[in-house]
Image 1 (cartoon, rainbow, N blue to C red):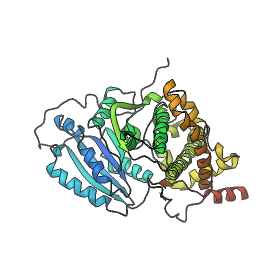
Image 2 (tube, one colour):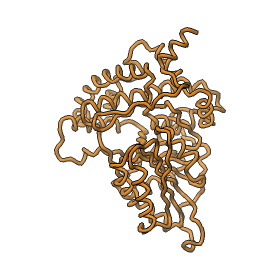
Image 3 (cartoon, rainbow, N blue to C red):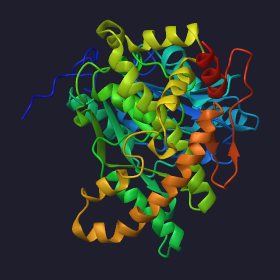
Image 4 (cartoon, helix red, strand yellow):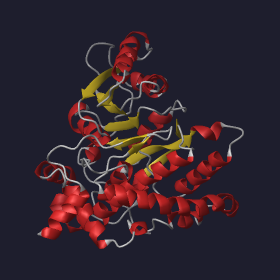
Amino acid sequence: MQQIPTPRETNVRAGLLQETESEPGEQKLPVLVSIGILAWNEEKSIGKTLQSLLQQSLFPELDRRNLACEIICMINGCTDRTPEIAAQIFSEQSVTHPNRRCFSGRVENLSEQGKQNAWNQFVHRCSSRDAQYLIIMDADILIHREEALWKMIVALENNQKISVTATMPCKDIAFKRRRAVNERFSMAMSQMTQAADGQLCAQLYCVRAAIARNLYLPRDLGACEDGFIKAAACTDFFTHKIFPERIRIVPGAEHTFEAYTSPMAVLRNQKRQMIGQTILHVLLDDHFKKLPMPERMRLGETLRRKEEADRSWIKGLIAEHLKRTRFFWRLYPGLLTIRWRRLKNLSPSKRIICFPAAAGSVLVAFVASLMAWKALKEGGTGYWPKKDGKSSINPPRSARDMTVSAIITERTAQ
């Protein structure tokens, strides 16, 4: 068995979780963890999300050790009451929470819409530079295991070879006694997804701060930022082969999210995923492998420079990829077969249960890949489906942005 190297520059202080003696209020407590909540128009869910967060055992554990935590709600281009609701909850909890001395909460309003921008702003500008761990989460989930966050941190503290810890994502329909056909299909799809190694769900995870700060999410990365973060963490920024063991789903740590169940919402979500997977394929399997080693090891700086030099650089790579790809169902390797391969990781009984879903997913993938192909041709990298089947599209393009079709035309003319 090949030995797994320790991740580079983890910057962890040994024994940080040991209890220390300090008089209450005598000095500002050292920040162990910074929590970033990425929110876009979540006024209906942000209250419940914050309530489940503030009930975590993380806070009494930090209080007992004289350590602190900061919570930052990253509002990216919201047009509803999400920031007001979050600010009110933080204000109330600063007075009533039993462990209020060990945490602070605030709202950061960002004018630019986009999850990638919110992630970058939280990691590189807003989070405390003293924080050893960054917890990043969506604003429409519920953390229904009170010890989830603390377990994620402890797992990182106890094993230096782990770069990222995550909770097990649970669809809200999993708690229903009776499920409709489409809901059973959705649950079977989840079982196949969870059968893959080194899974990372971007809805809630904890990453070593030094690793996150050596990353930068490009504006046109698309929907699969979790795959990008996973690939960077499991390869030490693309300097060696993938070690799935870098990612750990912590036993007993779970969160709940609202599942896509209507046929149109499922199809649109698959389209979104395929756009993201295509972008990941172009970046990870081709572009990054050509970068010099020093640029890979300083990946965040490298990507930031690329973004500043050309906001459409990823669309340029996509244009070249689409010129080389003859068929829409070949946007990336395994587009139609990945579910079949994951069946092999399931027990015989679960294979039988999931077989219809795997078969149906081929048809869904075929249709969704055509939708993704057309969207990519039009420069659509920021598509975001909603649970009710409606969707949002990319924000209006600036004069510096170009569609993929325009880039293809321009480069063909050259």
